Length: 428
Image (cartoon, rainbow, N blue to C red; front, top):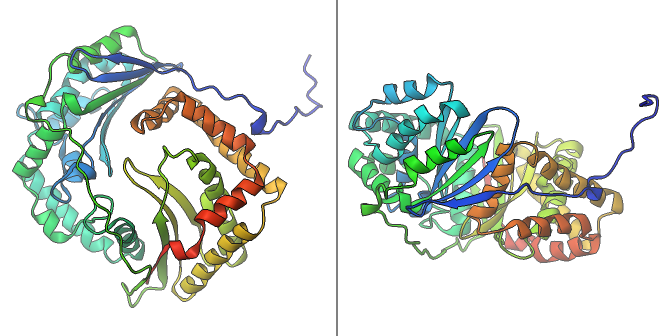
C-alpha cells in the first residue's frame, strides 16, 4: 500500500529517457507527402496543409500575408460568410497563417466531422478568388493597423533590426509600407495563390485520434489530382544578403514617449548546423528563459524592464540571434551596457554546476511537455521535417542538452557573444 507520508523521489530531467513517438509517411498519387500520427484519447484531429508560400516566395511586398489573411474570404461558389458558417457549424476552427518561409492552413475538428469539412477546406485552398470588395476591406484595415503600429517603438525596432541584419531588400529584412498595401489587388493575390497554393507545393500533416478512413478521406480529397499545378512554380529564388554597414543605430520615434525598445542582433547558425543545439544551451543561459542571466540582472536586480529575452531564430535559408526588450527611455543605454556586461561574464568564467543543471532540466523539461499529446508531438515532427531533419537530429539534441559542459559553453560564448558582432538599435 502506498505510504503517503513519504514524499516521492525527485528525479532530474537529465536522467529521463526521451523517445519521440513515430510519425508515419504516405505519398499520395499526386506526390503530396502526408505525415500522420495516431495518438490521444479524445476524438479530435488536427490537419495542416503547409505551402512554400511565405514572404520568401513573393515578388511583391505584402502579398504572402494578404493572401493568407483572405484565403477563406470567398470562392467561386461560396461567400466568406457561407465558408465560415460551414466550418463553425461543426465546432471546427480553421486558421491560415504566413511567415517568412511558409503559409499554413490548420484545421481542428472532431474526427467524425471530417467527411463534411474536407470538401469545404479543399474548396477554400484550391478555389479561393479574393473578391475585390474583401481585398479593399483588408487594405483599409491594414493601413489603419500600420498607422497605429508605427507609433509603437517595439514595432519600429522589429522592422529595422531585421533589415540591418539581412538587408532591406532581402525577404527576411524587408518590411511593409503604405504603398505596398495600396498596391494589393484581387488579381495580384489570385496570381500568387495559383502559383504557390498547389498540390506540387504542399505537405500535409495529420495528427490526433482518427480512423484509417479519415486518413483515406484526406488522400481522396487532396491526393489524387494535381490541383492548381498547371500554374505552379516551386523553384527556390536566391537572394543576396546586403546587411547594413553601420552596427550602432538610434531612432527617435515618439518624442512624448516614456519607453524605448532595445534590439541587438547578429547573423547566426541555422537549425541544421551541427553545433546549433550547443548554442541553444548557451542562449538559454544568457537570455532564453525566465531564469536567465539577462533576466536576473536587468529585470530582477536593476528593474529596468518587465522582461528581456534572447532567441535563436532559424529560418529556411538564414539564421539570426536577437536580444529584445522594452525599457524606460532614460535607461535604454544602461540596458545595452548591462547586456554587454553579461556577454563578457559568460566569456570570462564558466557557469557553475548548479546553474548548468537548472538550464539542462529546463530544456529537457520543455521537451517532455512537447511530447505530451498528439498535436504537440506532431509540431515537433513538423519542425524536423520542414527543416530537412530526422529523428536522429532530435536524439543528438537530447544528448547535447544532457552532456554539454560549462567549459564548452564558455568556448561558445567567446565565439558568438562578442558585442562588436551585434547590430545595436534603440528606438525611443
